[in-house]
Image (cartoon, rainbow, N blue to C red; front, side, top):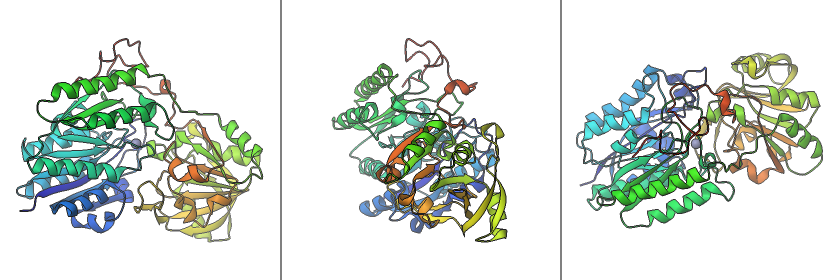
Length: 504
Ligand SMILES: [Zn+2]
């Protein structure tokens, strides 16, 4: 008889320092799909749900679809948002009758008004419903703030091994394969987790160049070849979250009798992360360096990409800060495409005026003027659209993205893609869908810190990552932590990395 497997996705990377609560509307704007409607939405995509749909077919499962929900990173989830989506999953599990397994796609850094460890709470609730013997595997983002509670209630935590994250599909296929083995009685996985007294580590997980994270992942690959070791996952943590569990961790899924070895592996990985805690490939520069690079590159082939990393909506940035735009205008830089500024009111103004009209705008700077005031300028409306496109780059390939009602505004020599729903600039379609060929521009501005590299790296002449003073600043002294476990490196003097962390 076919195995009955519950499939669900519930993701959010919560920046608790954001002023903007995350609501059900935020989920609806990205996606909130229930039941069998998940199949047409994700079949054939490289999203984790695409991997689970294919795995269900491969193994002949009888899948039970609960929900697929994700919202652009922002502030703490409201209680109602969390409970509504959580309860879709829990109610589906309760009503499903006998379940043989559960495959989840989670983030691991979701914080709600009532839960600092939302994924831990969800896994615990599911475990209570299905009992100790039904295998539960969850994929996580590489930037999960993973917890002992998550590990204790799952049989495996399978985290991305790429940043930019281009392996969601492969990780869900890996998780599904382990659940299949467990349901067939060939494996009995258990999961443990070790977290040191570190707020940051492992170079934030960057895998675009040789170095620490790639070496850690190569070690993890090696450990996974050992008999009785199923999965070795490194979560590097998501810094902008004021909860006790923020920071790197290692999760190991193992067979019975291999617990001591699994602990030793986790310890060895953490020891390496601790030893190499000062290694960082991040290179934030002042905006002026981006302007200088734009001037120096005038007339050269291929675009300079200026990454406005501290206003990255993929990390909870407001997507509306203006210092980079203002600096480009002040410097008179031309042939620029700017992707994107979130400003629904200006989009509406442009829609009323129509294509070709010239309008006076006060663009951006909506959420926090201390991060840049609105840009006052004359703008020509170049194009209007519903802002919907399908990703065709390496990240989330095939998944539909909605920028909401969108206007391309020409201000000076800059085409500004002005949007109504926050979206990280990870795909070339942010520009292409708006009639802009990014390869013909001298300068592209992207609101992204690292993910843009998957699609924009290959077309970029040069990349400059700038700190424009946004909420995702790398300067952690600007973050006022209240709930974080202490002492913790690098905020406190820490000699023993296990002093304040969560032990397995
Ligand atoms: Zn991530």
